[in-house]
Image 1 (spheres, rainbow, N blue to C red):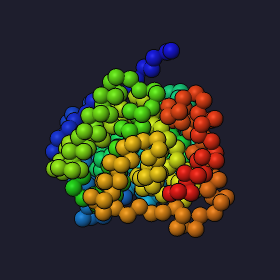
Image 2 (image 1 turned 90 degrees about the vertical axis):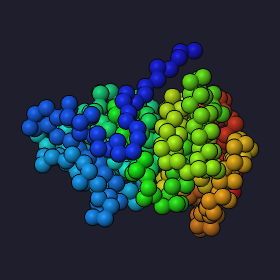
Image 3 (image 1 turned 135 degrees about the vertical axis):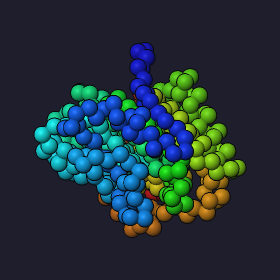
Image 4 (image 1 turned 90 degrees about the horizontal axis):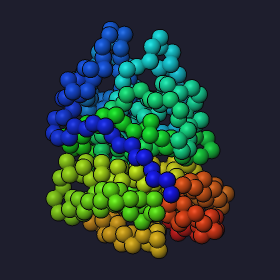
Amino acid sequence: MKLRNCKQVTNYILGKNSLEQLWEDVLEDKIISDTDYVVYCIDHFFESSENSLIDRLPIRNNDTIFYIDTTDEPHADYINKLIDIVRANKTLPSVVVGIGGGSTMDFAKAISILCTNEGKAEDYQGWNLVKNKAIFKVGIPTISGTGAEFTRTCVMTSKIKKLGINSDQSVFDQVIMDPNLLETVPKDQFFYTAMDCFVHNVESLRGSQNDSLTIAFAEKSLEMMKDVFFNKMDLEKLMVSSAMGGTAVANSNVGICHPLSYGLSLVLGLHHGIAICIAFNQLEEYYPEVKDFKEYLIKYDIKLPKINEMGVSEKQIEKMADATLLNEKPLENAFGPNWKNIFTKDKVIELIKKM
């Protein structure tokens, strides 16, 4: 068996007020001439004057700022609209910076890739389809859990499927983790996103495509999450747990839950973290850690939406199942090469109907 050559984030800065080092330690060496510029993808939450981060960022006159509307999951059409604006410039940016949650950082990943690779975002949905080296990119999370700052996946929905750009070129070159940026996150959103990290770790540990280093990252991440959620809320520790969970899943793969969640997001427009929680809640026959997850739900008084109360049609359920089964590599990680005979469409539909 050929061993995987794993790509990881090259540099990171961790700690309170680390955002202040963005220029001196990261951007200054990249901005050499007057024509060099940075593209900032910033979560639209920070567009309002009371939440604005602009005064804390080293923005220059010729830099481009996109306030990313994260109401919905990252969609190829939206990404294509932004990359058309960037491509219309005489020169490509020297750096792309993503500031926000997983969705905003995924926009930054996609723009970085499409700056140097022709075509549209949906052309690269799949595994290892990116040919050219991406623009240098920086991830700055303002919520922790997705692990997007450390994964090789740029999550994306197009007209017919939810499938990421899974490539080494999706990995950030630099990450800045400032726990001060997590202080404004609402409780429900905080929970759903953190549980994405929890599921990353479980799927990584229970899959067949991990190794000793991946297992170590995932086990430690779960241990830290348990401490954070049941003992003392430590935002820096949560950021580290997210980073380790993201690294673990980047170097292995997701499993059953993520493909199911992709179907929910594609058809019902559910945000990734909520879809993950709805799906994972019904997977106790595969993952004994669902028991711990249900304890988290009780402790934080989280009421999950119910698919069977949304008036979903049989046709929509079938479409969710079809979208789930497009994710062959994660399902092979979960069940092995014979997965199609184990995790059938009928089984997927049965699970969805329980949600």
